Image (cartoon, rainbow, N blue to C red; front, side):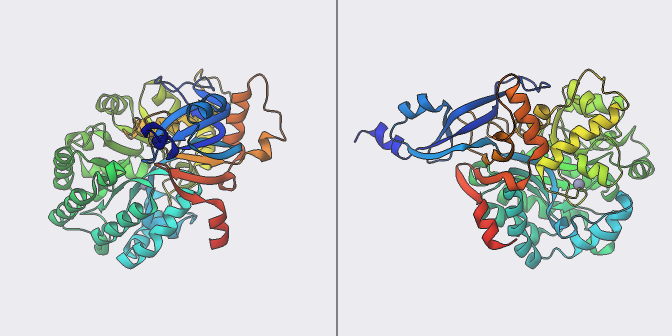
Length: 454
Ligand SMILES: [Zn+2]
């Protein structure tokens, strides 16, 4: 047997309907960005990288020795990206609160207090299994202030195979005593975690310095995080301009800053590897500063509606060419479902357009699915690795059974892809997710969840 035949034998060819964003362009409203291969093939190698994407008839000939996996009645789409979520808050999911600051004190700080290494050890596999069951292949995750618990989270992410950016929360003021850190300890422990985990498994696991938000961080802490994150080439993740009470508080705490964004700018925290959740109430000055820094804004529409925080100006920010991802913000948001997130992003935009959706730039199903996949990947700086079905990328994908509406409803003919995208976004949930693969590894299969009765 020659070497090429041997290499092909170790390849896998998935026959399915493939739906993927294509090309290097910017997000466009409508489906122009999406390509459907009705009888498609996805070929991956033993390293979990995508070798070929195309029509089955062509690729079956080209890769005749590859192991064939017939999913021809299913869809394969790129894995979803949750760009903002809090793992220790998972036990508080779905608990309604009056507004952000009250809710933090009532539910969230107590939940984070309970996040011991033992709890992290039992909660992390459940949390990662749920994300994978929703088709989420990449997540940017906050833990709590505890470094030992954060270590457990990394170990479970490593074992479960999910792609993750993870960071220990940093807080050295204005929080309950049981969560308040000494500034130097907070920095030292975060740096140790970064050195140990940032870039592990060929960059599948990455570190984010995670000052919770400006009110819980001293100037000294923010300044040191800025310098250290740059030195290590790691991420920074924090919250920005979520709630009006929070913004007033920031003004009092940082009187020398022009606005909330300026607090982070002065600390040297803004850059392409900075993930800023919410960014709801930012003014034009802040928008320009964030754009110039190429910072990633994370839209968390389910959380923003749940906690009455406000309606982000998604369409305007995308038109300005901001990098935007979608985040569940669990437990600020009541669900890990990327489908709910995509729907909510449209509803938030529509609510802002009331009474007439006439802004010219619409937030469509194709656009929110882009933000949940390739757009999110690009916002996180992972656009060359994941987010679409393209040769050379890691094989991060989801197998969806859409037979409930793909066969019974007319999708064929003119506008076929538009109809499909719309129904995928508005009619799907985790029951449609059959399998989830990260870097070619099967990380979730639907039957397993049923048998485990979670
Ligand atoms: Zn959050």
